Amino acid sequence: MRLKVSLWLPAVVAAGIVLGARLLLFPAEHVPAEFSEGRVRGAALAENIVVLSRKTLGRLDTIAQYDRNNRTAEALLLISQEVLESGKMREEAARLASQLERMARSLPEIKPERARQLATEAVSSEVALVSRLVTHNAFLTELFDILKMKLTDRSSNVDGRVNELINNINSEAQAINQFNKRFIEALAEFDMIVEK
Image (cartoon, one colour):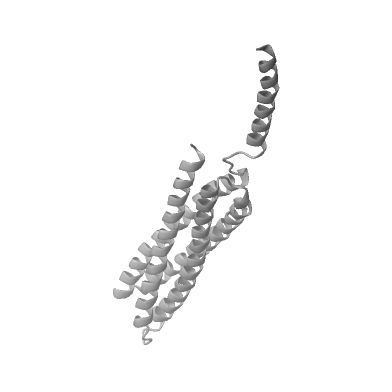
């Protein structure tokens, strides 16, 4: 009996060492710190962008009311403030893009495969958000330019273009919200996988 135990014991110890080394060196679940850090910072930036976008939509309604009531000075002041806010959104988008780059670089290291797929989906959603934000800001800039022209030169007829731009801005804002929602959903599912 002693002979059988002594043969099995080294084999079990060796198997344990190999298995331990495999789990230590190649864990079944692995999320790089760079991904986690980028995720936390990126999520905060994306949320801030969504909040700024919602505020912009509210201010557009106020600008439209000022326009209807011929309160040109107030409308122009609010437009100027909104142009500054639009700059803040662009800065936040640049910061978000930087965090997304960090996350994207670490995607190949994420394990298991399903977690990597969800992380890739989340990063892709936020990249799409940034892209839509660029379009959103371009529409905003054009709208503010047209509104300034309309408010300073009452003879200009740009109402059709104003309405079109407002509809486009609303569509982009909805898309931004949807992409951010998908980012959050994908990472919630990701968390369920890697936190088992």
